[in-house]
Length: 231
Image 1 (cartoon, one colour):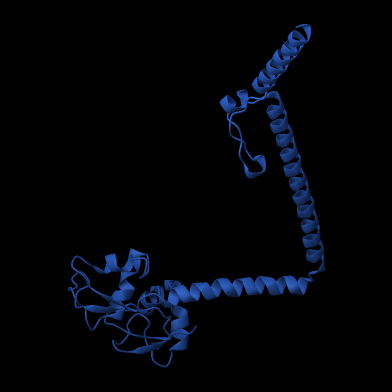
Image 2: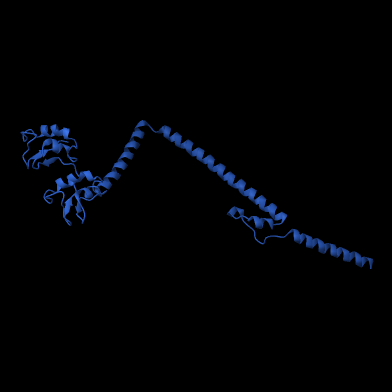
């Protein structure tokens, strides 16, 4: 009987120990992988057993150390790369620097030329258009004050610059002319002041010097006279 009671007591103690161990080992039913960016919420963390909490904290510490090591390695690589760049710069001669600058300028100018060549050479007048509206278009001159240039290039189509008619196709001059056909009442000073000529009335002397054989009076030009524009 005494042996039976001893065995019974021992059995109850083992059962109690098992129950207690099970209670201490209570888990949330979900594990996370901190290396993959997964973490427990605050609520889920409180449901972990002490062992699980320690394992989780150890995993977090290990991941932090791994990330810090990666950052340190990348920082060292960055410093080494900067040193290599500085060493290469020191090897570039003044001639090489000038070559690089010129190549950069060429690329920039090529881009500008391509944009310029893509601009339209004609413009079909639309309802409501006037020469100043056309001139201020970005693809024309982006400057309404340049409307006289369009007018001078289309004298055969425009009788009055105030009135232009829809569906008329106007020429949009892009090049810099090397000669100019004199219109009635124009003077050398007026012509020199045109944007496409010199954009400076004071340069009329250049026109006069280049056309002495044709021009008798700079203030009284013959309409239709073809003037050379020295560049």
